[in-house]
Length: 174
Image (spheres, rainbow, N blue to C red):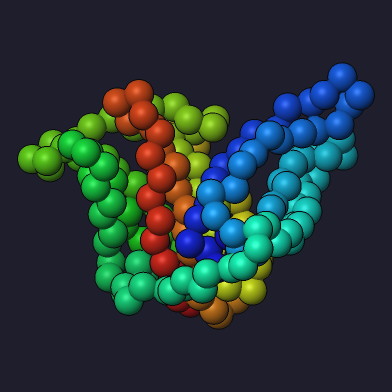
């Protein structure tokens, strides 16, 4: 949703006529942003953004919580017996996010391969800016990216552990 209260990572399929399609049902009315990110035949990454209103009447939601990941210094999302921990490091020019999974006794739980690495993250700004983050390498759950312009952002991260994909949502304010 454009209020950043929801994010779903969907993979399109190519129809017989060559068009990419997604069959999706929206959970509730609202204004939604859709981002199509792809690499063209020229090897250059592209992002196309679409906005669509769904339903009859939108219910306003709180956009931001109270804790900024960059000032909190750590974030933990708990999913059953697994806790996903994010530790940020910020310099004048870049942001690095290191991820780990632990069980209820803080014993490390391995992250499994997912989306070509040990996780998948997107950073979406309150202004609709979008950045797909790529792990530093396929075996390390660490993401490094250029520090974005000042503003508020939601970080949506999906990791796979114990055979299940979980989504962690956190906030950044630059």
